[in-house]
Length: 131
Image (cartoon, rainbow, N blue to C red; front, side, top):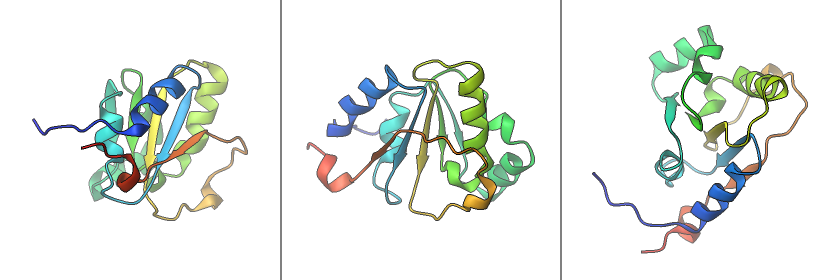
């Protein structure tokens, strides 16, 4: 098991998971977003392989299945997830239901139909790590 160094963002994530339904953690690739979020998630969907992305696009609802909080890593690879998460929270709002991560990969906003916002936290590894 790899050693984890506490980050300043840990407390912020914990607070937000007790006050909102979904949190978006964004930042550059390989800065520690997923590693940090995995500490809080009870299940996860990783959209990091071509096959996972294809399956997610074919059945995006399946990406939401799992114990809560459910982590969806690199959500922007399946943009329809934004709409599904917003609709799911509209139907059954619970604090800490989803954690979604997104790197700086551009999102095709043509596929996002819902106008609602999801609270976000910018992740900057250089400023967050406490060795």
